[in-house]
Length: 86
Length: 195
Image 1 (cartoon, rainbow over the protein chains, first blue to last red):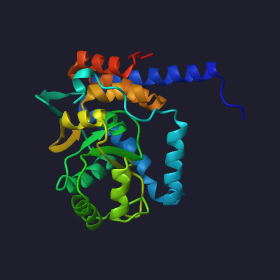
Image 2 (image 1 turned 60 degrees about the horizontal axis):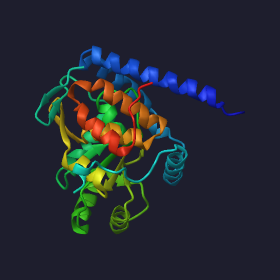
Image 3 (image 1 turned 90 degrees about the vertical axis):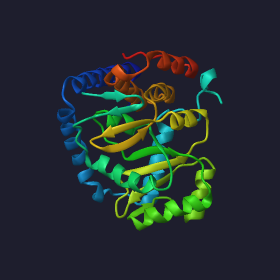
Image 4 (image 1 turned 45 degrees about the vertical axis):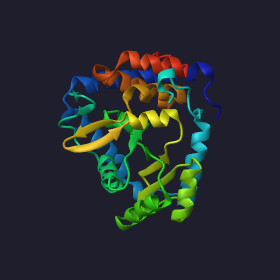
C-alpha cells in the first residue's frame, strides 16, 4: 500500500485541526459535568481492554521508543526567554 | 467549561474523574509523601477536556538523593505499583540521573503508566517552579503553566503535540496570559497558527 501523498497528508492535518478547534469550542460551551462525562466514558472504554494488550513489557517499551522516534518530535530543550534563564 | 482562577490556583468544579484520572490520583497519593512534582505534556490537555486517551502520564520531579528515591521506590512497590524498566532501585536511579525517564504501572497491567523524569533543563525548571495547582472536586494536580506548555508542544512539533497545544490554547483562553505565551513562542521560534 502506498503512503498518502503530501497533498492528502495536508488535507488530513487540516481536518484534524478543524476537529480539535470544534472540540475545544464544544468543551467551552457546556458545563464541566457534561464534557467530562463524555470524556470519561471514552477513556474508560479504551482502558477496559488493557489487560488483553498483546505485548510483553520489553516489546511495549521498544514500541514506545520506536513510536517516539517516528513521530518527528524534537528532543532537547528550546531556548528560554532571557528572563527565564536563571 | 467553567474554569475558576484564584491566584495561581485553577478550579474545575464538577469535572468527572475517569479511570485514567483515578490511576493518576492513586500514584500522586504516594508521590506527594516523597517529592513535589509537576505534570507536563498530553495529560495536561486531557485534564482540560481533550478527547483522547494516553498510555503514559509525564511528570517531572526535582533531582533527589538515592535514599529519597529508594524510599519512593519502596512505597510504590508497597502500594501495588511496579516499574516497567527491568532495573532495581539503583538501576532506576541511575537512569533518572542520566536524564532518562522511568515508567511505573499498577501490577498486572502496564497501560496506563507514569513516565517520571528528573528536572534537567531551564524549561523543566520553569514548569516546576511556576507550577499551577489545579483542583478538581477536591483533588489537587500540580501542572505546568499553560503558556509554556502550549509553546513547548508547538516546539516539539509532532501532529499530536500541535493538536494538544491548539486545544489547550483555545479551551483555556480565559486564563492564559497572552503576552507570556507570545514570549515563549518567540523564544522557542514557533508561531501559533490554529489552521
